[in-house]
Amino acid sequence: MLNSLLVGGGVATLSGIVGFLISKKISRSSFGHYEAQARAKANAIESEAQNLLIRATSRSNEIEKEAIRKYDEVYIRAKNDLTAQESHVLQLQNDFETFRLAESAAMSVLRSGIENIRLNLERSERALEKLKEEYHQKTKQVTSVLEGRSMLSVQEAKNLLFDQVRNDARLEVGRLTRELEEQTKEQLKRKADYILAQATSRYAGEFASERLISVIHLESDELKGRIIGKEGRNIKAIEMVTGVDIIIDETPNTIIVSSFNLYRRAIATKTIGLLVEDGRIQPARIEEIYQKVVDDFEEAILHEGEEIVFDLGLGVMHPELCRLVGRLRYRASYGQNALAHTLEVAHLAGLMASEMGGDVRLAKRAGLLHDIGKSLTQESAGGNHVDLGAEVCRRLGEDPVVINAIYAHHGQEEIKSIECACVCAADSLSAARPGARREVLESFLRRVSEIEEIATGKYGVKQAYAINAGREVRVIVNAMSINDDESALLAREIADEITRKVQFPGEIKVNVIRESRTVEFAR
Image (cartoon, rainbow, N blue to C red; front, top):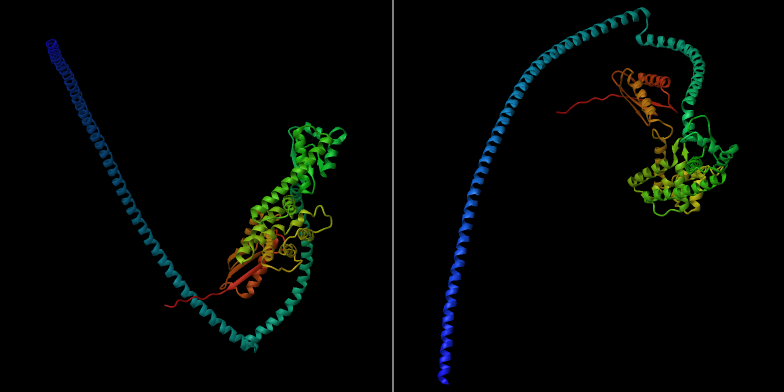
């Protein structure tokens, strides 16, 4: 039994050893195969890398040759450009040298001519001085002979002659003065009538068109009949509701809304426009559209007034005052829009108050509200805008400075604060500046130019300036050519010529200035 076990164990051991040797042999043959494949792949990779290196080297050489070729081209082109620039600079230098030589020669000739002129002037001055001396000597001789023959001194003869001339001239001047006064009155009357007629024919239509009517353009004349309505009931309803006059004439595609009240006219224009767009034009619809437009206008006016107060940085203001500020857009005074004038005054007053150490916000507030009564004058018959504005501001609790500014800018109260003074000054500036009130810029510039040309055209005038918006002309004369007596005559001549040739409102002050200056230098 034991022997069987030993034999079996030996056989198993031998079988294991044989199996191990066989598997080792198989493994060794497989490793060799794999190693051969790896070496073949490595050789293929190495060959491919060698080919890539060869191609890269070839491409690098080509790029290098291309770069060298482009560099040579750029170098040659830059060299050629540099050569051309050098040639151009040399040409410019030659041209400049030629020009300099020509100018030097011309300057030499000019200096020679000036020197000759100077010498001739010196000789002429010496000759003139000699003639003056001879003239004075002859005058003295004549004077001595006259004194001996007349037994009078020169001063006595002058006084006697002046007395005689003065007496004769007084009678002649009195007679001429009466004649001139009568002629002047007649001429002035004719001139005034002519100017009035010209001004009326030239500006009446423009003023009426701008201030009294609004023109509405229609798509066709058929709409005119619909606006008029059967037996004119539509147009009568529009006029009765809006309070304006509707003018429908033969002008194609046009109707005219006439009213002195800008606010009512604007509402009527908007109402008619909406009716035309809607197409349903009848009395009931007219009243409905009109009421809607009025409500929209009131809301827009309040909104605009609030925006103005906000933009000016005035803080809180009563809604009624805001509404009145907005209504100033539909109010004009002497051709100047009241809202534009008010805003201008507010800004100017604020600027002046900031420079003078006043309350900027209060100055702007007073400037904005100084003409607030103009929003109420067309609805309050018989009241002036100063009293109406002061009353509404006092009722709504405005600052006393605002109320003082309302009264003071028309001289009804004394100025009591810096802010009030700024408002009064700003109001004068806004109302009196050129172009503010019925003043056309072109006509203003033409009138000022004519005034200056008249003054500078006179003998002895050095400079002339039209100042103070054309209401004053300042004339500076040469003190060596014009004496004091001649200055008075010159001022009269300039004033007379301005009166004859220039049309102007009011009066123009002619201010002639004569001064002599002597200058020396301490060295």
